Every structure is written in structure tokens, then in C-alpha cells.
Length: 283
Ligand code: GUN
Image (cartoon, rainbow, N blue to C red; front, top):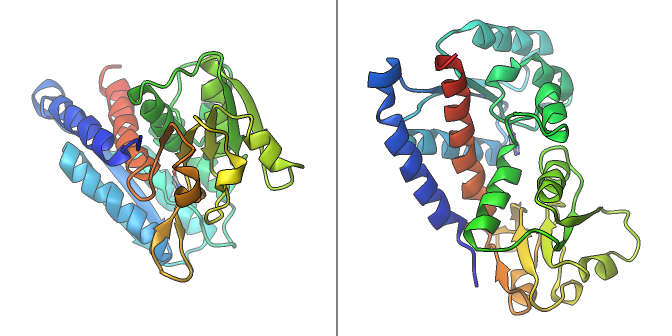
């Protein structure tokens, strides 16, 4: 079975749009998301356009602020300080990666934690790991939503996460643990990786390498979540971190690329923006 993130994200966005449509009367305005894009990375430009389009569908106000890759860290921090102070801004997202001369951690830490729709601020990361109310990072949240929608039982299952990034691997491992999976996190230096991935009943792959996980690394009946968004060097088409052709016949369910996790990330960003807005206006 193919788990369609495209369909589920459309459904989620439609539900969110219904909620947002009542906001002007209830709260006098709609949520406002500001996306900051530094430089001209084509992948980042595509993601930022996707976020603007989804905002339109949901009825959220979206402002995209583009700055050249030559922007100084000081100027970027000053821009964020302005957005933090702006009462009319509910969510701030700085598209990553940033140019090498800018300290990514400094930038993330400078975003007001109440406006951190990515859930990357240290205060949100700490809250997640301490099971306190927080903004959950969009991609991990989208993965859980996909699993729940597909009727996958998480409790008691062996989950293997390939990749240990702050954005996906670590937080999704925590969310799976919180739902009582037995979780193994592995990475590029794990010895006998295929042996580990074959233990998985739920396999989440976020390692950032084209078709890294192949059929021989997956046991029959596994639920496979492919977080990768890579460009095939030969065809120029998008491909995942999972070799769909060899893995799909063995999987019980699998997410495609494109149309799997990607659209769910954006739908969850809309959800996080609305949550930040509501926390603010309902205070
Ligand atoms: N770059 C890749 N994924 C993400 C994400 O989830 N948020 C931000 N801000 N940048 C990204």
C-alpha cells in the first residue's frame, strides 16, 4: 500500500482552512507567517514557494522575505529582531541551510520561541524531550500523522530511524518513543546497517542520500517512511532515500517521493502557525 502524503495533506489543509475562515470574526485577523529566504538555492526556493502556496490554500497570510546570500549575520539577526517585535507576525521560519558565514544556531536561537513554527529553538527542543507543551518540528509531526492515518500501530513495535539530524532523525525518534515504540537510531557510521534496518517493523529513512536503502535491507511487511528529497543525477527527477523499486514490493506500506512526507511537512507547518497564533490571541 502506498501512503499518500499528498492526499492526507490536502485533507489536513482543508480542515485547517475551515478553522481559519472563522478567525477574522473571532480574533480580528488571520495568522501571519513570515518566511525568510537567504540566497538563491533552487531547492530552498521551491520549498519556500510551497509554503506560500499552502498558506494561500489555508487562508494564512504569508510574507516571504528574500535576502541575498551576502547578507551579514548582524543584518539577518536585526531582521529577525524586527519580526520578533512585530505584533502582527505569528510565525517566523528561516529557511535552512544558511550560507556558511552565518551561524545557524545563533539565528535559530534569535527567533522568539513563541514564533518558532519550526520547533527548532532550544526551548522547544528541550520542551519536546521533557514532554512539555511545545512546537513539534513539522517533518517529524507529519510522519506521525501519516502513520496514524495509515492505521499503523506504533506501540510495542521496533522502529529504526536512519539519520540523526536535529530536524528529523532525533525528534522523530523521540515522538516514536513517546508512542511506545522500541527505537533504534542509526546513521552513516553504524556497523552492519542492513542488519539493523532488517529488524525494523517501522523504518524511517532521513539520511539524505539517493536510494540509500535497498530491498535487501528491509524485511517483508515493514512500514517504510522515506523522508529524502534528492535529485537523481541522471534523470534530474526527484527521488527519495529509499530505492522505491526494490523496497516497495517488500513493504506493507511505503511513502512515495514526491507526494509522501514532503507535503505533510508543509501541512504541519500550517498547523504549527495556527497553534502559535492561537496561543497568542487566546492569552
Ligand atoms: N530546510 C529543510 N527542511 C527545513 C525545515 O523543516 N525548516 C526550515 N526552516 N528549513 C528547512
